[in-house]
Image (cartoon, rainbow, N blue to C red; front, side):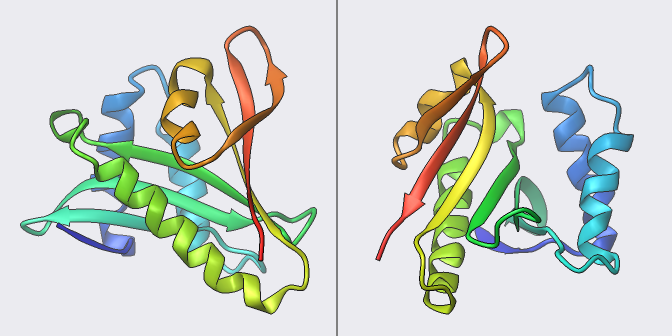
Length: 149
């Protein structure tokens, strides 16, 4: 298993994983967000993929917030269904936390990682130390993890 940056030519492979996990989603939405990594925006998202035998089996993205440079957003944490429950999502989230922690030295304040998630999936993020900070609709919430010095 190898974690590396997403390459532009791998976008379609990643979109299949997302579409498989979220069959009702229109692929235009995640495609636009993923393409931003290769665009000319000032603040670009970063996407990591997990590969096994050169096939992508998982993806996760993150980016610095436009509103506050001490806040990072975590999104599109997805693993192929046949590989779920094997620690791949955990590895991706741990790698992203590690990468963001490296950036902490550039800032004097503590950093915060946020994500929006369903209540059912919130249990997964609690094991990293994420806490619910706001309730959305009936079964959704915003969670945050503070990275302190």
